[in-house]
Amino acid sequence: MPGKAFPFWLDSNRSKRPALAPFAERPRALPRTHLPAGGARSAERPGSHQLAVEALDCEAATAYLAEWRDLAERSLEPNVFHEPACALAAAQHIVSGRRPYFIFVWEAQRAGALLAVCPLQLSGRLGSSFVRVWTHKQAALGTPLLDRARAAEALDAILAYCRRAFPEAAGLALPLLPAEGPVARLLRERAERDGRPVRLLDQHDRAVLSFGPDPDRFVEQAVAPPRLKKLHRARRRLEQECEVAFRMARSPRDVRLAGEQFLTLEARGWKGKRGTALLNRPQLATFARTMTRSLAKEGKCRIASFEVNGEPIAMLILLISGDHAFTWKIAYDEAYAAFSPGVQLMLELTRAQLGEGGIALTDSCTAADHPMIGHIWPQTMPIADMFVGLGQDKSRAFAAALERQILWRRLRTGLQHAVQGLRRLRKA
Image (cartoon, rainbow, N blue to C red; front, top):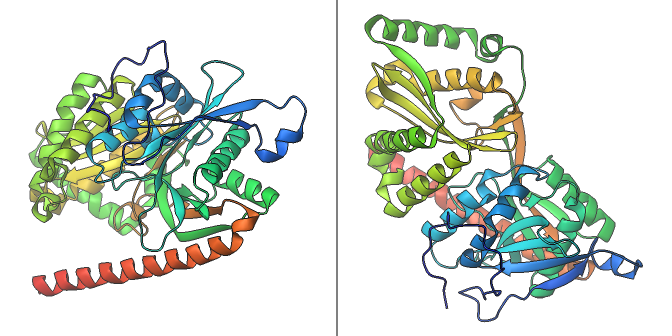
């Protein structure tokens, strides 16, 4: 039976693990299996350590919130979108149709040592035969969480589980993966070792903020002088008539209040008119409130505001995971469009992030060639969907499935362009 609705902040200190529940939409249970560290090859090595792999539905996964959060702090590559505050809230509130389930990899020799969490979903796309690491439209990354000290073994266990649990699948798809990040490099290394094919699709560059001189010098060097001069002039005009301030909500109470202001501001703008604002869909608003408030309790959510006379005219939700930050959502008051409030906010945020101790990289979470952020953050990070074969014997099936995937993406892109063309015609 499907799990009941649950608040994902349920007490995580349950002493007993629940019985493994079958995934609600699958007709069979997903068993707990024991796999040798390093994959099938290491089974022949005397005394090899065993790893336990569990597939849990959302409700069962709530028993391990403490272990899951601890793993996020020591993961090889941070990804706030696969931490429990985000992943469970998304699975509970915004998934339409089949929910994901979560692969947990444990060190069987030592109780409580969680080595990996990877949400999976069988792809329902046209002609696909890939097992897919689950993401959703509100997530900007699909990187699984791997213990940095045991990442290779944990990754081997995930791939071995996929091969055993889904013998019909040709490969594993990992969407929105930093193409040069440590997880992608590890995937390539393991694939080369085992003779598995690897392909990247839809690779593009995403703006990030990772290093630079002092904050003021960075802005002066990154933004083109004519544009920066125009922005400074607009701010001086604003300051002549109003009291201007930049604020950062950090405490759970302040994040809660600022979050409601953000939802209202976003709904008043073009996203609200187009029907894509969070408040346009109650389930999205519930997800946003649940995620941001839970992360704020962990010190992992901040909301930046550019204010005029105490009222925000631009706001941004910033999520934190390890030493990475993610600019999840931005909104601005279109009545102040002449003053570029969104850009003014990003300039202030840039200075704040460069001066923030403990943050090594801020991910813009934007699409390629974003018209605003690219003019402020010249540094980029390659992002791609990575496809990894599940075995040498599946090479032909992998190639055929990948060709179907490419065809499906071309059809999707063509449809998107057609829809955009129709919108332009309606406006003309």
